[in-house]
Amino acid sequence: MTYKSLYNFIELKKEFQIYKGSLSSIFTDIVKILGKKNKTKQDYSILAFQSPRIIRALIDYKNKNPDDKKLLKLLRDGINVSLKIYQKYDDPRIGDEVLKFKKKIIKSGYDDILQEKLQQYFDQINLIVSKPELSQKAAEKLNKLIGSKKAIILVIGHGAINIGMDVFLRYQDLNRKNNLLFYVVRFSTSPYKKYKDDVPQLTPDEIRYIQKQATGRKIILYDENTYTGTTIKNVVKYLSKKVFHSHKINILYNLNTKNL
Image 1 (tube, rainbow, N blue to C red):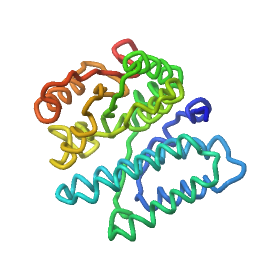
Image 2: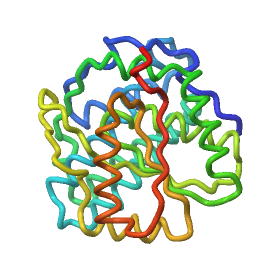
Image 3: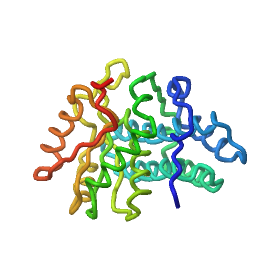
Image 4: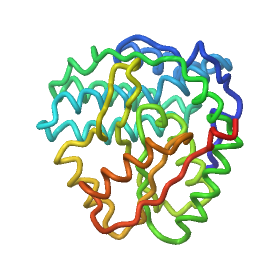
């Protein structure tokens, strides 16, 4: 199936990026739009910005409950659902999969995740580096970097999740070998965003999971942009010390914003 990116035709506007609500309301918005036969550009724009918020909510909840191993499986399921929305946004069956995932959350006893509060702020740089031509170039670089090998891409969240998903799916469309795993690591340092992470937020079980998945694979660290390079350097330093003791960590981003 050829990947037709939402970013090729949505509106990269502040009104879709800024958000305050709950995971429950995110599910409601997504399912409603997926059920429409005729979607507007606004509908597609909402889907592009709402889908990554499923991952945001699950990551935040996981970090608040680091000893709960079941949350890692829910997070991986949430990542897969979000990627499917990006990939098959015009397939009405995807709405059923979203509802099925929501029911799984409830059945697993995590009703409170649905009330997890999310707030996303205006980020002009994020909108600029979301441009489809930049993500396509990043996907092509990724294709050359990985080649015929297997790899895992670790996307720095929360900021790079949406663009990272798009780059990942563009890469899959180019490569067609299903040889790349997608995962998200939260490292949000902006004080006004209320996270102030000192180090990447990974639980001990999560580290073991990533180490296992990375066996025999190239490691790619992705951020949507770099300016001073401090964020990526800090994540590389942490991963080299705590996760990948003898692995090379390759870096990929959409744009060096010093050029702006």
